[in-house]
Amino acid sequence: VSSLDPETASRLINGASSQAAQRIANSSDPEATSKKVVTAFKQLLEGLLKKPDPQSN
Image 1 (spheres, helix red, strand yellow):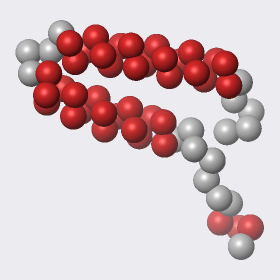
Image 2 (cartoon, one colour):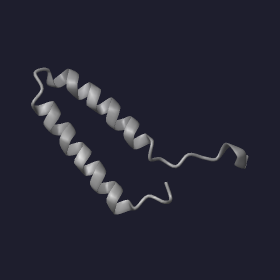
Image 3 (cartoon, one colour):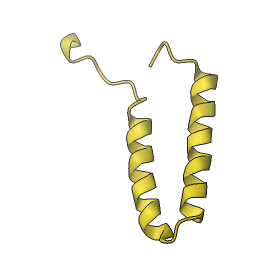
Image 4 (cartoon, helix red, strand yellow):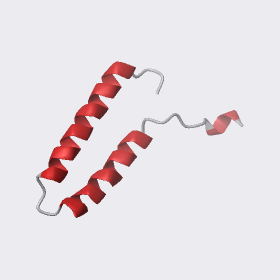
C-alpha cells in the first residue's frame, strides 16, 4: 500500500497485537480465542500486502 504511512501502520498493528494479547489472556478459553485472533490478525495483515496487478501481465 504505497500511500500508507509506515510509522502509522506499524503503530496500528502494534496496538492491534496488544489488544489481541489482552483478549487471549483474559479469555475463559484462551486456546479457542487464540485461534480466532490469529485468523483475524493474519487476514488483517494480508490485506496490507501489495498484490500484483492482474492487468500488468
